[in-house]
Length: 261
Image (cartoon, rainbow, N blue to C red; front, side, top):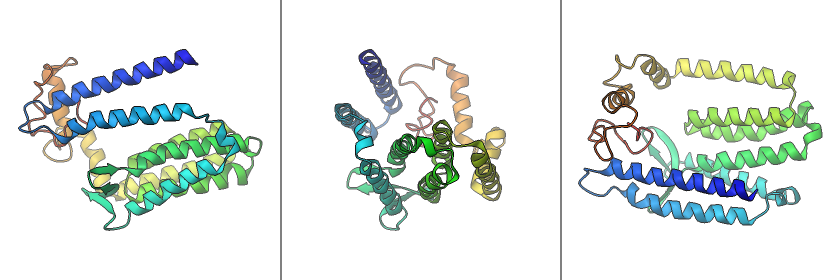
């Protein structure tokens, strides 16, 4: 266990160091020092402290105090509700996913991922022998999982909703839910998602642009096309630290999902 913890620590540290190098490269050539470059080291330190505090406790105590995971999930659900309230949640580009207090901005959906996994794990272990029944194995877990995913969907955050639906489904299957209870809602969910994507212009246009990048390179497919241009000019190893061109106005918010380009 000690060896695994040490390996995990050094892997996370290496990823954080690589991330800082990439942020420095992405900020090179800009007139002022971007705020994300200043905030990243601070949040790295905070993250290390939180991880260290988490290792000090014994997760098996959750079995003795079941109110803890449910309180966590309830708190996350409250934050997800506040995000949807006009004037409280911060709306950016048509999506209300953030809560802002002064210089601090949090995204409750990130907390929801962790809390939902903890609650499903606790539930699956607590009712292991009853997971094969319809009520304990399907209805009750489906209720609290559906509530959290529904709140994520309303933000809207379709990607996180689908991710959590997949993770939750796999955890329930591992916990022992029967396929005859699992397949009907799975099929209905896939049909509902297909209908939603077909009738949602923004989502369907994104899928179309993904399939036809050249045709949509001036609109929806701009970032994907610019990423292809970056890979074409720099290859796998790139053009060198700080020398990337896509950060010079070609890719908006270049320090986020498209930082590799």
